[in-house]
Image 1 (tube, rainbow, N blue to C red):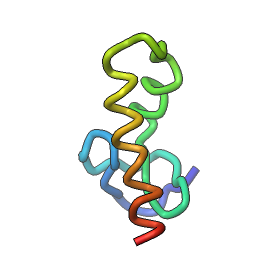
Image 2: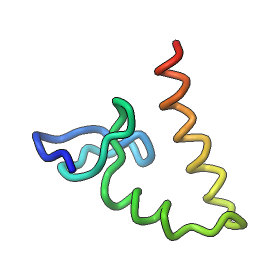
Image 3: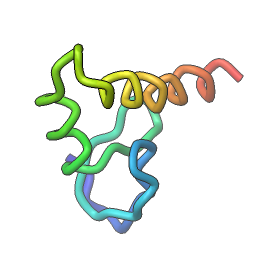
Length: 61
């Protein structure tokens, strides 16, 4: 967990205080929990995948 100030979540775009960092990008606790419980057949699953791709695109830019 990272808890120093507010950070913008790459999934929902909101500024939140608690969450995780993957590489250098922040994912809030709410989005993390929703991603973990989303079934791969759910339409929102693909949204999460597209948002997470930002991590790799920014890292390799």
